[in-house]
Image (cartoon, rainbow, N blue to C red):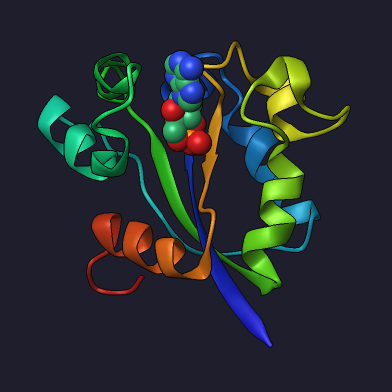
Length: 136
Ligand code: CMP
């Protein structure tokens, strides 16, 4: 059964010119792009998206970073989409990410880690709807 995940190419990777190679790696891994756009979030919008992290010490830095420059949110479709995508992007900290993963190849650091991937089917649906309220 085909299902969906949600991703965003983050400001560091967009600025560094890695949008093309990241999308290429995602498509070569078998994902179909259901929805895609380029957006520049306000700090308030970033704060709303990351509300679950509100109590974390890095929340302020995270919202400032995610609203600093444009990002590229996408809804992706593939069998076993969520789990396979977490493997494709690698560990949150690029220094700990496996060789060949998107974060290992393209991320700058733990806080500027190139790409987001939803951690569950439920969050994929919630996060996708945040950027694409009409489904795609
Ligand atoms: P992601 O898992 O996509 O969503 C939460 C983000 O918070 C995470 O990526 C990192 O970019 C960021 N993050 C996690 N831990 C830290 C940290 N210790 N310091 C700064 N940013 C962090």
